[in-house]
Length: 273
Image (cartoon, rainbow, N blue to C red):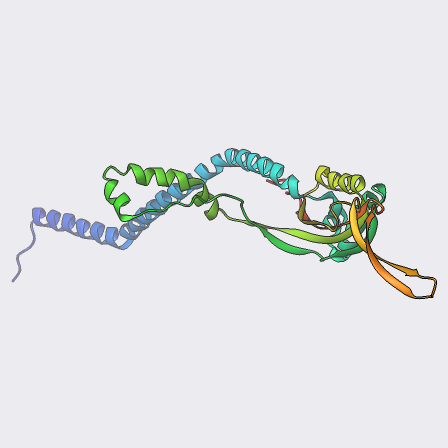
């Protein structure tokens, strides 16, 4: 037979029951909330770190914009060399069908002004061409005794300095531009042909003379040729003889040259909107 619980035992039981209920409530209700709070705190820290990185990049935007504008401005100066006003209608419309006609209309006034006679005029049509860098590569020879003598690395450094420019330029990225080549043969006096070449040289557009050939560099002055002369004696016999004749000509000669016109679109203005 169980004895009746004392007041002290009842209080202990009540306290133990309360502790058990609180512990069960903690694990059933509070623990998940706590775990979620810890997870949320981790998410917050990760998001905060990510935002700080994004904010740091946002703070760099004004500086980047200025750098981009500066780079674009400097590049524009170089690009202007290849923005050929000859092909402005082509650049405006992106229609290349009239490129040959435009080139003809551009060159013809110079030909007329120099009073030249055209015997051939042919254009290649537009094409893309890679522009390579022009540079000199020194002819450096190394040999075993040189390498063995270079105990301090001085010779190797001298060779490296000598090849620095060519090595740097050989690794730089090249670019493509639009080209149209004109093969032209004209006839005129020495003065007029020289004037025509000067006009091409002074042209502000990107034009390169790739070949020049003058058929007669004397322009007909002092040239000698053999002439056949026929004579008839009293008996009617015809005799032919050769004689040397100095031909002063008309002072003109043919000039054949090849002109390549380079063209590129102007650089667009940076838009940060």
